[in-house]
Amino acid sequence: MPSLPAPRDMPTEVKVIIDAIGHSVRTEILRQLAERPLGVRELADATGTVVSQVRKHLAILEDLGLVIADVSPDGRRPGGRGRAVLWSTNPERAKEVGKMWIDYVTGRSSHDVAQDE
Image (cartoon, rainbow, N blue to C red; front, side, top):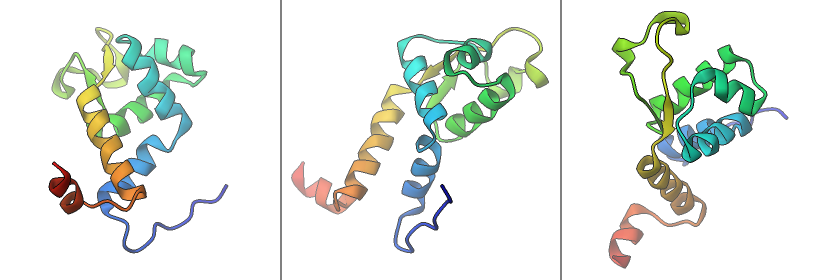
């Protein structure tokens, strides 16, 4: 399916969210990591994806704050050499991102939400 351009008035943060979690493998990675911390090889096996692709997916999810590694980016060795990094879903960020998406698709703005609270 071809990628369609985002509507002009779609907030950038919503577009980034859709791009990140709109991919079935990334969504499955988040689900797997919500159950327990896993390494890249375990995620590749669980999702039927090659390790190099899992690393790319994790980088996208990490940039959005949806996953957390037990080793800081500075402590990781290139190409996965060294100690295996364990990844987890960041549940607080996942809820925040989900709420932004729901607010957008239901036509609610941050202003509407503030009035309800």
